[in-house]
Amino acid sequence: MKFRLALSCFALSFHSLLASAGPLEAQLATYATAAKAANPAFAGFSAARGEKLHVTNFALGKPDTPACTSCHGNDPRAAGKTLTGKLIEPMALSVSPGRYADPAKVEKWFKRNCNEVLGRECTPLEKGDWLAFVSSR
Amino acid sequence: MKFPTRPLALGLLALGFSALIFSRAQAGGGHYYPPVADPVVKEECGSCHLAFPASMLPASSWKRMMGELDNHFGDNASVDPEVARKITAYLVANAADTGGQRYGAKLQRGVDPASAPQRITALPKWVREHREVPDWEWRHKDVRSKANCTACHADAELGYYED
Image (cartoon, rainbow over all chains, first blue to last red; front, top):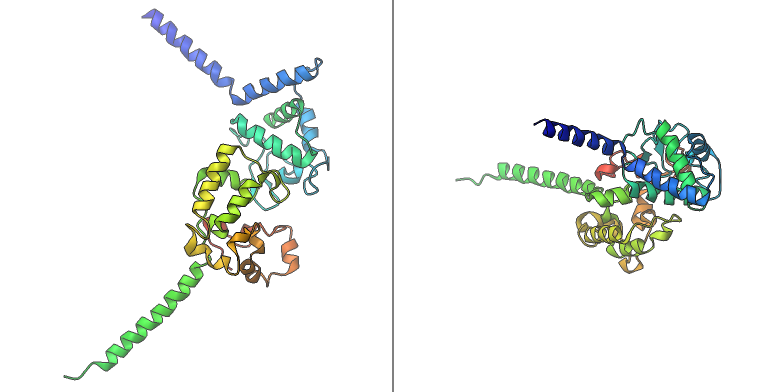
């Protein structure tokens, strides 16, 4: 009986451990590994760098979208709008929980949007920084 | 027994009148394009712009568009091949000249399906229907794009494109 109780306690704690390491954390870990491989001096992602990436006017991609904020707006807690008037859910994780729960979807939009704003794909460092930024808001 | 001319005439008049109203209502129904019902198509084709109803273009147009997603009106909107296959199947099955016949046929007037038109906003019927919209309205900050149907057609998401 005692053994079974201990076992179920163990199972429960293990479960909560898994729950805390969700898909977003797993994706960040993948980006961290790649960032470390690209630069051995990599010392973790930075929300501040991510914010800078988010608001910088690159104007390297499509003329309509010089910055992330062109569509997402200046406040990550507010909804954005595409050029054709479609609403975009707020980027801040605090307002849109579950926004980054599908790694394939996150990758898809990094690919599209980085190309439109920067004229190239984003690096794992940039992706991690940006995710750190929106997770902190 | 006398033939009841008057009630009969009145009845016929009423019938004719309701037929007229009904046909007008049907004409109004010509502005109804069933919204995309497939969740995958809605998600993949409806993130950047309204998921345009399949019945707004002929099947040939959708096939061509789905084959050129790497340059989708200037954007790279590629999706993975399996998703693309599903989307194409849905669009083709519900296109103006297939499943969506009843609704999309009018919009295709003067269009040769073999030419596989890509821009809904370049269809002759579309142009005619919007000829009275002045230039400043298109440039208005809440409109900006002719693909922004909902700016003026409040119920576009539901399939209604009334004036």
